[in-house]
Length: 47
Image (cartoon, rainbow, N blue to C red; front, side, top):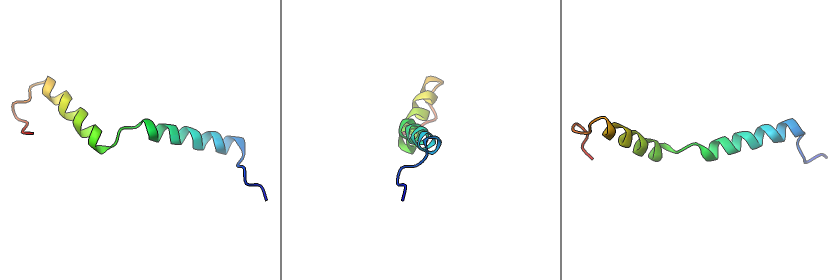
């Protein structure tokens, strides 16, 4: 009964977890998109 995964599996899981933690969620992505659109003229965007 080996409860500890192998080293490659553990490293892959750790890398995927870190990537998911650093990736912004949909709300933050929308905010960043709106902020970037305002730089290029936000006359057509209603908040």
